[in-house]
Length: 204
Image (cartoon, rainbow, N blue to C red; front, side):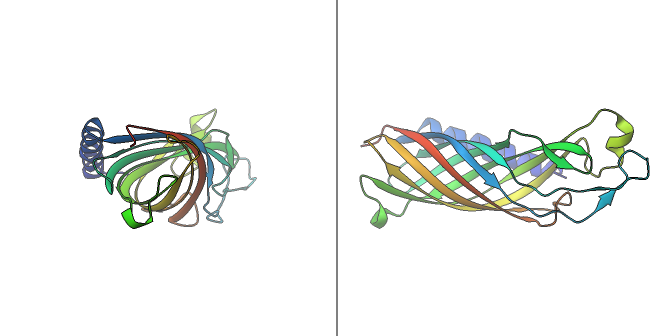
């Protein structure tokens, strides 16, 4: 789970990022849909104490994505992305929801950028949360991490903004998260894929 130092780092980074956004020459906002993937850890749990074993699930399904970028020049910026699993997944007889939140530094390679094409290379840190749906504390206590497990993560990603107009864009993205000690699932590495629609303010 996240430790207090991790929380402090995220708060400082988030404050710094939004301070930079306030002075940005260009600000992008976007919303879309995607998915995140992690295998099951293969465990079986007697969740309800009735002798029946329930398999732990994998991470997947549809996620909704929200984000904002701010660029202080043509090449460098900061950004925040949030991704939420809005439908409940199955996990050892319970339901669960997951979300990812990331603060990034962004590099936009000037030689590759045009009026209609703007690539992004991103790196940052953040956290993921897995929240379980349960009806009684006894069943929740059998499932590690229930009711709400949080984990520190590191992030690398790439995206491209394809401009439909001077300001409106489509943004396909591929992200890779390394989630520290992501024990509810079978891998610490979590890829995420998304497609968003966005708008750029202050763009030349």
